[in-house]
Image 1 (cartoon, rainbow, N blue to C red):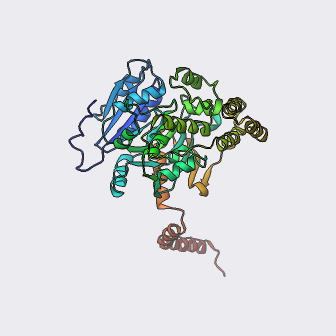
Image 2 (cartoon, one colour):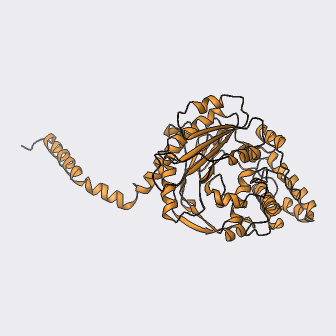
Image 3 (tube, rainbow, N blue to C red):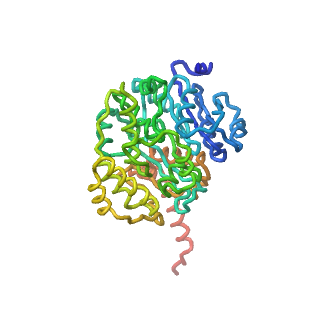
Amino acid sequence: MAPPPPFSNAPPGSTRFIVVVPTRERCDTLEWTLQTCVMQEYPNCEIVVSDNASTDDTQRVVSMFRDPRIRYIQTGQRLSMARNWEFALRHAGDGYITFLGDDDGLMPNALSELDHLLRSRGMPEAVAWRKAEYVWPQFWLEALRNYLSVPLGTHIERRQARAMLEQMATWQFTYLQLPCLYNSFVARSAIQRATDGDGVFFHSCIPDVYSAIALASVLDEYDYSHRPYTINGASKHSTGGAHFLQGNDAPSASKFLAENDIPFHPELAMAPCAPIMAAESFLQVRDHLPQRRHLPAIDLSAMLAAAASIATGTQPQVYKSIAEAIHIIGEKNRLSELAEQLLARYPNQPATHSELVTGYRLPVQTLFLFANELGVANIYDAAIACKTIMALSQDNPFGPRNLLQTNLSLAPVYWERAKARLQRRLALRPSKR
């Protein structure tokens, strides 16, 4: 499908961005996601809404936005998550592409800032960032509702894809440190190199994780910003949130598993566990992308250890799912004895969310807070609140220098007030006879 031409009022030399929003029957959150998109004062972009056979008011909600940058497409039939992402990707034109969840949002002015960042750094094929996080008020776990985390870092670094993949293969960090399409803008040229001969990009039922591994395997380097340009939302609809917190029995997770038509890799077993999902993507990339530039072999022993370590703090139903997967993976890969040892070492000790951390955590340069007092009720509000906090952080109003400057500038006012108070007290003092 031929991409639409850039808008005529796009600044010369500006970067073309395509924001892809796959959606299905989430019109209540989609409305606010699209609000974060249309508030972008950046003309050279397209917002592709891919409706996966919704039966709610999705089409009406999209039509409410009279914005020529929005393009609404329909799959025509119910597709699995990965197939909907593939369908949407094929309708995205040339430029830098990202995927945005239908309960997530763009930060205010994100596209203009990313245009400047890309051009100032020589137009790398991919730029990734650390996302802000927001839990919608309707989230099923009450203790987490309206919880907001705002990364306050500003550093940008150029990363070597091979080195990052090697660290990922030993489970030293999560896939979001790579150029995942869920927190990156990636040039069409890089996506094309990670596409097989039949024109298929996604070869896993977990498309976001797969995109991170696949793209890193064809890139030499990419940029990573510690400043967020999107905000991740966890709503009552979130498949990932339900899967990781409730296990395979969660309604949305059960629906996802039932509709999946890309089998989980046969050397592994499906479980709500990040190391297992990342390992699955490594193996799918190995099997489907022979033209990749680099892809280290994964250490299944280290993966099982990481999975068991994570499982110990999960809820019992999640622990059960992960433990079963560890057993199966151990049997399939002659690691049964190790699997038994790991599960004995990491019994289930569920963590609670009754006392979530709030305040600024210096090691991760992130502010954690409940957003109720800020009047936040959706992802659009949360994005504006994040941007405001980020701006205040850059000004550093509570830093020693600003405190000193502010108080010195007010010193004459304070002095005049002090004199007036002293004069009033002297006037009230009884005179001596």
